[in-house]
Length: 137
Image (tube, rainbow, N blue to C red; front, side, top):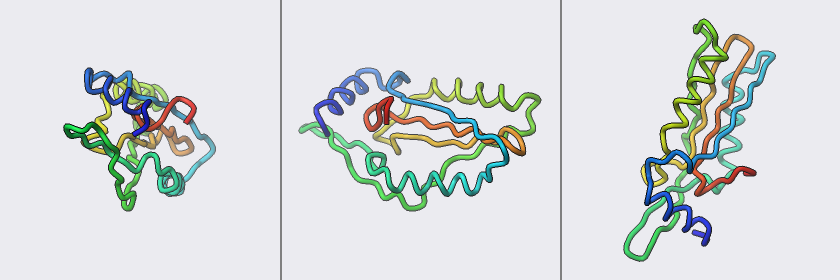
């Protein structure tokens, strides 16, 4: 871990349930994107983003990043197309999810979700622990 990552990790350990250690964004794609093709594109990006292929372990000597095999990873899909207002349902999903902290020891330090908000609209919701990604990542 870099010195900055170690600092973020120490802060996270003091307040592990604090969602402020999450960096997130959404992107709404209209015009009929195929969710399967979109998911495959995210799998390709994930395989190329080696910084995300980790989890954290820690012992008396401190924390370190352990490589994780990216094979088999896939983004989550949530179908909101049956909701009265799919766009509002997507906003509510993201707002609720942002209150849930990511645990880089238990699983991947990121989460990707495709929110299906209608027959021609996909909302890509990306979030990651600040340990592996900053706001410009």
